[in-house]
Image 1: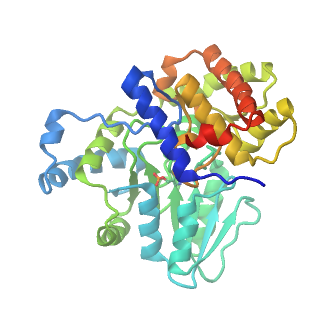
Image 2: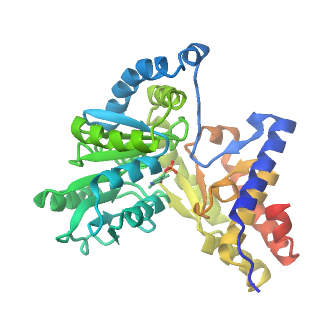
Image 3: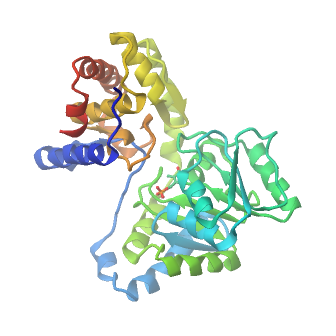
Length: 383
Ligand SMILES: *Cc1c(COP(=O)(O)O)cnc(C)c1O
């Protein structure tokens, strides 16, 4: 019998480990290498302005300035999450029977796009081969993912090609630039999505920048106002406390750390290869996909029924428990990727040397194999 991953219980366990570590060793003992900072660098003065109308009055002006500098466009719209921005945009522009055509450099696309397409009764097609990309008679929206959840970056040529195709037919182009608004730009010097000709783009304010989890959308004043109406009707907007956190993060954002990690990751990668491992590189670090994690464990203890998502989550839990290193599988929302991804541009990477990092990775493979061999999987994940 194969066991299934209980996503709610594993997340509770992951957060419980974090809470214990904070109580016993302090918040600084944690090494968060997810690349999802969740920073909230506000001052007492900012907090004193957080009243229902004062907050928006003061902070809306500032977010317009720093948001437009970051994303381009005429106007920005701060959102509770990138997901809520995607949902509001589709609800505003896509009708039942329409088609959404999505070009992305690699599967998978963010599930919020497919989910909202289903909600409004639209067809939804994903293309990962640029030669296959096409627009149909009922296509009313083209979506481009600038950088995928696994940090695969679109090429500027493909980006322009899809925009041209859409513009020939006068179709609205929306860019999911959750991490792309920084990765694409810092590493590959690509222009903003808006400067490349997209009508709208959205970014996640906690990804590769030190802001709170939230979304920020940019576009023309007309489009942003239309989406803002939906956003307000359904309660998708960012409240003032979130907006002030975004402003602080955008004010101090600089692409330098990302550029440095882009160079350093090659050395890290080589050190892992030298240990006989088989990681993939990302623009700012490395990753092991769940299948590869299972391969390594199977090499150590032989074939087993345990599915790869469970093994990868065990790995993430052990890395947290033993090395205080936070990766997504142990603590992510249900359905989040089970890839162990290390973002070397995260500011917590200052807390650990490359050799310590490699040691932790190697040892955690051994520990994961032990746990699987001794049937301790459920204990590690849930108890
Ligand atoms: C993270 C991400 C999202 C969603 O961001 P949330 O903050 O979880 O709503 C959407 N698309 C891509 C490509 C992402 O990486």
